[in-house]
Length: 271
Image (tube, rainbow, N blue to C red):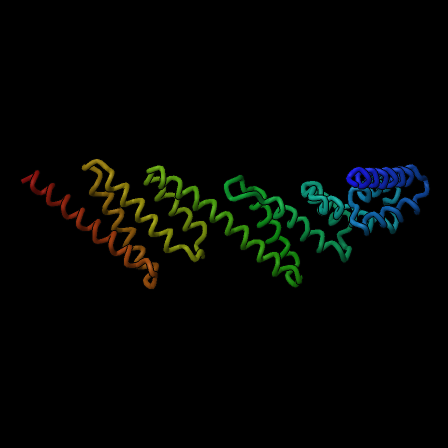
């Protein structure tokens, strides 16, 4: 039975390939275009793409060219060849700037970068490009029905960039590089000022500076505990209703106590 199915599948494939080869060899442009449309409609994008590509120089400049270009671009997209699709969507908008489809093509160009946006741990160049192109799309088409989706994608991309930056700062902390961690968490806050996690980032700034002060040599501890106190007071001003306020107050008290002990030691030494 398995042999029968294998033989049947091979036979169907051979017939299909033979038919496609016949279409390719045809000199009838209309027939070739009609078959390309059929392959496209049946989601056989590889075959459709091959025929569209062969017809490209022949149909260029005719009324059929716009529709061919449109479907040719989508053939690349549906086969997940996003880099090529991006170039084709961009090309369509440049060749047909007044087409009713141009808005769609500009959106899809940005969307191809979103489809290429990698895992958080990897380089986020495509994520950055997605944000830029989606924002350009919104600015260029203020009344577009696609703007809600564009804004949602921008939010997702920004969340990914925020997460990546957080992981980098967290790594500094886990490696015991507390000054670098404090600076990184501060930068994270500045880069994403509207983040719902801003108060937790600020606590991590405080924790990092506190650990940095604890591990410092005695001559440096005074100024570094003062830095922690400054960060704690800044937390109180910026997040008076935060659930993390108690934790910030604890670090403030501990830092003040450490500061007093250091000042008392200095007084005894100089007395």
